[in-house]
Length: 196
Ligand SMILES: Nc1ncnc2c1ncn2[C@@H]1O[C@H](COP(=O)(O)OP(=O)(O)OP(=O)(O)O)[C@@H](O)[C@H]1O
View 1: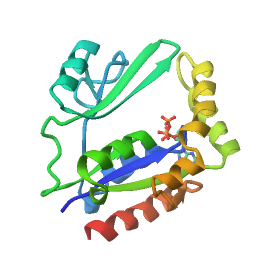
View 2: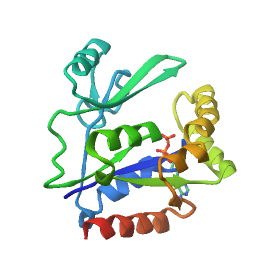
View 3: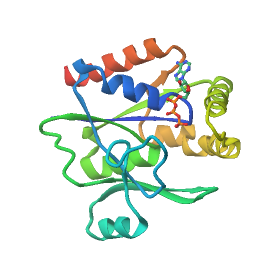
């Protein structure tokens, strides 16, 4: 039986970077799940690649049809953006294992939908000062840096990933992302211990 490996961590801990490296590591044979969002499509993104871009009405319809596995809403300075994983036939755990990036709430909802045994948490951690530095460096490279949003997310992180909440969810193992190559190797070995 396959697993869904759920990468989690505060903002700028390297989830996206690590996700791409694990996804591209052929030996791990991890499939991806395209999530859905109501946020506007960004330059460089394509429908069905990073996300399926849908509007609120479509999401509501999917919800009524019982197809929403998990969803979350972010009250951004641009309005409410929703993100969701939808039961649209992408996941077949009898054939494959999957990799996705989630929040603690996503992890909990996935456990409720698929059963705790099917979901493996991978919690990534970076010391706060270093993490803020990486966030700032990344933002500064954008055409229009959004420092207010960066600060909002940084402050929200503590509540989203409170230590008690992690413990309550049974997430005890933490992967420190101090050295990218080493961290990815560690996580890859962890994934292989399930799949191998
Ligand atoms: N081990 C590392 N050493 C140095 N820089 C790193 C390391 N891992 C990731 N980074 C850099 O840190 C920044 C944040 O990484 P990334 O965008 O992957 O994080 P994220 O957790 O997906 O962030 P967010 O949740 O905010 O979208 C990027 O610029 C990335 O290149």
